[in-house]
Image (cartoon, rainbow, N blue to C red; front, side, top):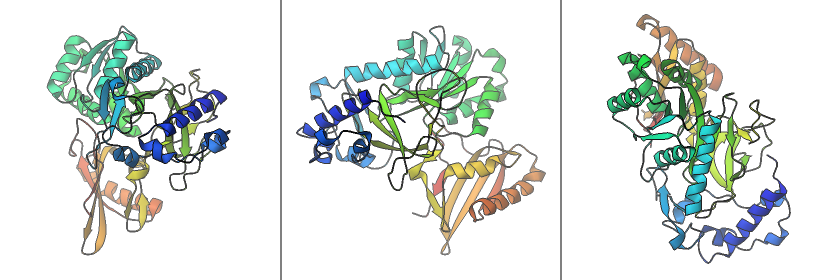
Amino acid sequence: MKMTEQTFRIIKEQARRLATLPYGLYHKKFAGIDFDAMTSREAFEKLPFTDKNDLRDAYPLDIRAVPEREIVRIHSSSGTTGTPVIIPYTKKDVDDWAVMFARCYALAGITAEDRIQITPGYGLWTAGIGFQAGAERLGAMAIPMGPGNTDKQITFMQDIKTTVLCATSSYALLLAEEIAHRGCRSALALKKGVIGSERWGEKTRRRISSELGIELYDIYGLTEIYGPGLGISCAHNCGMHIFDDYVYIEVIDPISGKNLPDGEFGELVITTLQKEGAPLIRFRTHDLTRIIPGDCPCGCSYPRIDTIIGRSDDLFKVKGVNMYPAQVEEILKSVPGISSEYLIEIDHINGRDQMLISFECTVTENRYGDLEKSVMTRFKRAVNMTPDAKALPLGALPRSEKKTKRVLDRRF
């Protein structure tokens, strides 16, 4: 993506200021860098990356770039391992986040007349409160349900006449299946769904959209950079528009760290342009995507990234073969009769790695054997490794109100 002169100046001055702070991760990371000599994008691309370990090392508040009295809120990432990552926000940060989120709703064709039911979690996690702030900024009715209590969720959808559902793809699917089971779709006023927080495939998308009869929009964001609301897909569903007046994006080779040209898949790297509480420069998100070249048919001028296909740290290795969950999903998608839900289980038994892929089917049980053989054959052809395969009926795999865990690796 082209870096404008204005963006370059903003980043350069931000980096210079962070380096002069008497504390914090950039005090050390940028030590010795001559910012006067940084005169081009190529020089910017030589700045060191920031990653989650840097943020953990800054625990609890050494990441802040303003006096503590200016911090009005903190959030923390949803990770369950290691030292927590705490992100401080100033009042401007909170307001800016709401502005971006309201833009997301507007790009999805959502207006002040809509009633937005918010099912992601509240608290230290950024999701629920971000969806709510954006709805209120837009002037829409926010219905802050939070996760779980599916019976009450459906009751409110019916009684309040919810028009927009905000959810993870896992919980949206759970709701869609329960609504289909109850046969109450005709009693709902749902028109659109804003889905985020986890990667989801085309089969899941089609199931949710079909069961609920709604348009679906991908929303993007991460706690370290405000939260969800950095960008969203439009009605043309050809990538997510990213608000480049708030963030600058790069895509790098996750192994070499070298920048890739627009159109090539790699790891997304984000630099904040306006954040006060915890500005980040060249933050490695580990999300795998590409910058989509050219203009969007919708006419929106914000640049686009493609649907997230996975994470660079989701890589797993079985019998010497490196794989991502997205690759497994692509293979399963190619087999007619296989539904959207699957689970990868990896064990080390009798000195050997073993991988079992369980998947739900839309066919009768007498065809399960054929599907299992087809999956094993296609895996051998695609990645030169043959897993065990197990076909299951719809609904056999566990559903989640948050994020679905696709890989269970019991070797370590």
